[in-house]
Image (tube, rainbow, N blue to C red; front, side, top):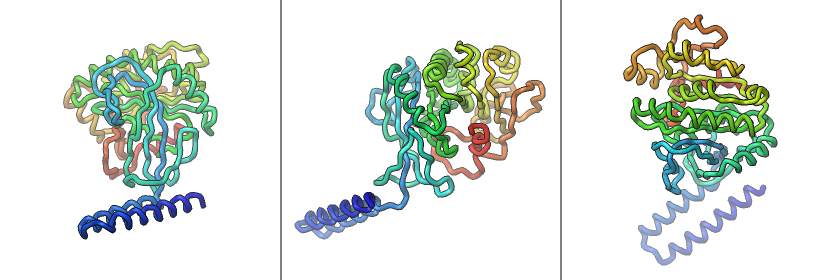
Length: 344
């Protein structure tokens, strides 16, 4: 009832304003204003609500010094910093309304339907994150945290959109968090930047595990983002109770040299009991790019992986493994359904 009253009032006010303005205007101006008024009225009375998800983040990108959300951080290297941002999520009839949590809300008004939009970015001091996140999580139905680390050629904005899309498709009711490293548009430079980010990501994971007090923490890496994630898991030092919070390590088409992972990285991950799931694919675009730039088999390639017992390898070639946040038309079933069976 309150919504209807607000919308009716807005429409009446708009109509009055249009009549007032058109009284002394030319025919062309009158038509323009009338069209604008009709479009605004339609937007205000839309039946398709959009939802917002508030995400918390860590990044070692350099601040872009811009008030425009998409330009808040650039692709240069920086120090570890923290913050929060809001993403508008379009209403999807198949998924329906996002399940409520302390990180979500539903809004009505003017915005294009069918698009994910980064609405704002708010840098915060680390102490604020350590205070706000636990209190917010305490009000959620799900006392867990989902931490996403993106892959190659992904901007800060795209990382936020990817995390929001993941949260929406999973109908996630815990704390949605992401780490954005300074990925650019050049493969070999991204590889160097991924290595550079290992220390910052290690500190980021340590802080989340120690301060959030989540019952479960799910770490999800995509493509080249799996490299700093796995290296961080070999270096992070936590009390046994805090380390035990990290339940799952989910690697989506990991762009890591397979031999290096099996012989060097995996043996050094002895300090974690997290269950590891690796999604492989022979149709993933990012892995195709990797093969053009690097020799050797990647961990995300489809192979017989009996030499690494204890790790669940899932062939995801038949579904979309695209997690880069760029606008796209999904022609196949996405990987979200399978991930939801892990994050319950």
